[in-house]
Image 1: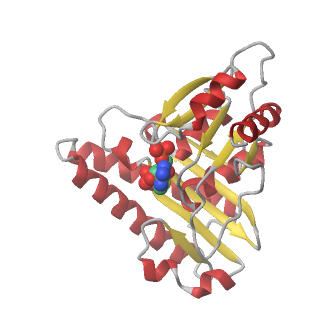
Image 2: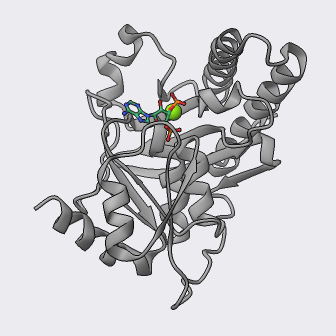
Length: 255
Ligand SMILES: Nc1ncnc2c1ncn2[C@@H]1O[C@H](COP(=O)(O)O)[C@@H](OP(=O)(O)O)[C@H]1O
Ligand SMILES: [Mg+2]
């Protein structure tokens, strides 16, 4: 089958990789979490690389699981179309029985902009994509905002931010699962700092921007993708109405 539309392709590939990961979990069980993580990363990466080579042979790919030589390939920096993929985001949660906060990310960057993307949440039975971006929930005027943070590496200042703006913290694994939680109304924001890479956020940010959500660095500047150094250490995604309050709070705390 040839999928001509990039939005549809992103969704199909993320969903199909996710099904492979679900089957792997089923087959291997959780007795050896480290082996399960390793095999999950490897199998999903190989599947996506082969599928993209077949469907879009002229495009470049930046994957978390690529070798450093592949990542440093200068052709990627000259390319007009680059797929930025995280074959398994929330690898730790993938290897923990019962957890549903892990994802497959497939994004397309074209000439400076994220133009398509999909986040499969296989254990939640859904894929969010730019083909049919979810309708953002309304921000209730009285409710306390909920801010999603890393389960294992929450930035230190986020508890202070929550105290400052009257919010509650919700630990969730996987950047893709956290940003999806903003788009589907489980939380109102996601804040991260202290380290991350382009593949951790490209696909969920593509979907978030297509929905009209706010997505930026924590100083409010744009998230920039397909750089030589793929480090993108901090991020804020939120319902648009909450972004000014959170950005002002972060600015005050960093003064
Ligand atoms: N301080 C840090 N340095 C590097 N990567 C980080 C990081 N904090 C989070 N990440 C990455 O961001 C993703 C989401 O993390 P978390 O679940 O803690 O929020 C994970 O991707 P992977 O699971 O693809 O490795 C994780 O490795
Ligand atoms: Mg990741």
